[in-house]
Image (cartoon, rainbow, N blue to C red; front, side, top):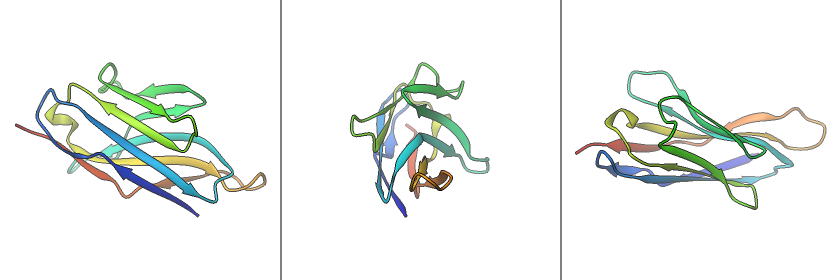
Length: 120
């Protein structure tokens, strides 16, 4: 099994910054992809940013403001969020796509989510 521990959410004023962290642990053979999604009240979950073998992809709404990165050990993913706006308010979920061994197909795992509130 895979466990994901997220941290870094909270309340921030518009224009402020936050950094989210997510560490994956457990019986992991290979991490194929790490990313962040978010779900605002009354809306569907949406992709924020993903990182695959050092390549990154961002939602248009966060380009230039958010940066996704991964630590050297490879099991922790970060989301640096700058110039935050009220519309960034949402529960942010960590997502990893991992293989548990060299035979099985990779699977998605999700964190429990961390709330980010942008408000004055």
